[in-house]
Image (cartoon, rainbow, N blue to C red; front, side):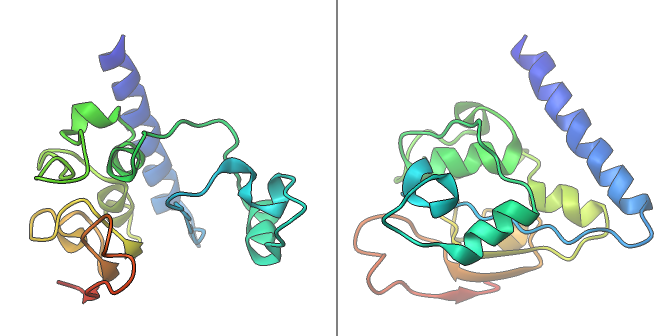
Length: 164
């Protein structure tokens, strides 16, 4: 059953890539994956204490996912998002000691969109490997600016990386 689900997700992603590749003017696609943010932290989700008008506009005029799951920590969530697979099947089972790196045979959204003719970029926290082939530039992203490391201590003075 899980193999079938993975195949369906892959088929859907590849179908999207084929449709987009055939379009006269493919749409711009921007995905915001926020770390340590709860569903109710945005005003578009009903939060009355915080105003987030620009993110609300993106959600209103674009697509907003309202049924999803996340891992208990950041790297597994990112792995599931990047591949469309359950995080443990991608090799990502933690946030340190190499447990945050995707298996090298995993196909990422960056690679799918790049194959469809898109220019791709990732910005912000990567935390899925710091050196090629785990660096964002080795995982289908043409442009990267952010930090590749992950957790405590690195939030306050991260070493910024621009294209490896």
